[in-house]
Each structure stands twice: as C-alpha cells, then as structure tokens.
Length: 79
Image 1 (cartoon, rainbow, N blue to C red):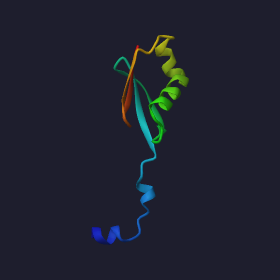
Image 2 (image 1 turned 30 degrees about the vertical axis):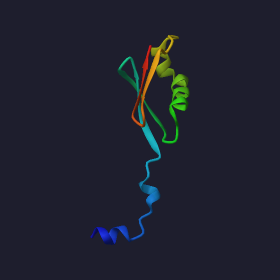
Image 3 (image 1 turned 60 degrees about the horizontal axis):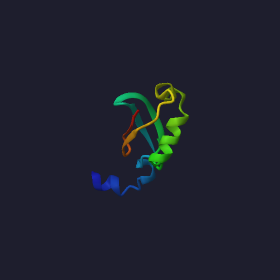
Image 4 (image 1 turned 90 degrees about the vertical axis):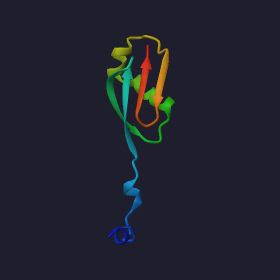
C-alpha cells in the first residue's frame, strides 16, 4: 500500500512546514503566540516581538537582560 502511495506522485512541497507558532514568554510566563515564517532567525523574531503592542505592555520600557531561544518553539525574555 505505501509503495503505491509513495510512487503516485505526491507533491512534497505540500508536506513542508512553512510557518511556525513561536510561544513568547516573559520571565517564564506565556504571554503571546507569534505565527511566523519558518525562515526567520532569532534577531528577526525579536524585531517582530518589539513591534507587538501586546508584548510591549509587559515589557513596560524595561531592559531585556537575557533571551532564551528554543529554535522553532519559543522565546523567553528575561527582564
């Protein structure tokens, strides 16, 4: 059965994941979920986070002391 399905011309482009849900945490507490393109790196995700009004109310002009980024899963901002 699997041999016939794999040789039937499945378009593998549809099987690739192009977007991700990145969980945004502040001091270990989940504050938001960011739906982003999979090709973004940590710096680009941080730029998007700083533009978010929902996250900015938690940051409240505090300095981000540390960022913990788990690739394709979450980013934790320590303030």
